[in-house]
Length: 94
Picture 1: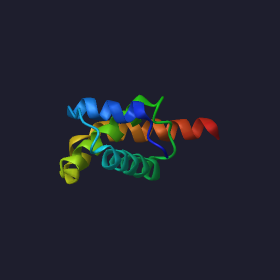
Picture 2: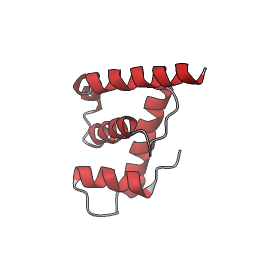
Picture 3: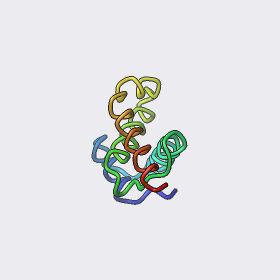
Picture 4: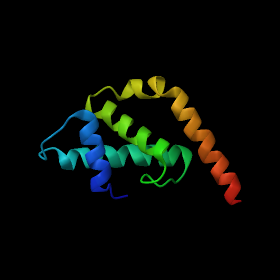
């Protein structure tokens, strides 16, 4: 998974990061968060799945601020909604 410049910029805008010195680390955080959600809930297109995109960006933010342990609790309802959406989409493909 390659994180696009668009996703990276959305994360940087969300966190008010204006410099490029951390880009490599931020891309790693975003990739890690994408793979975490993908492994748990299935493949999704981060560019078009706005709920998945939001969860990747928010989870990366928690990781960036070294508060990852709180992510699941804070975003419990969105994570549930995402999981249901992913399961529904998987059933439609079968």
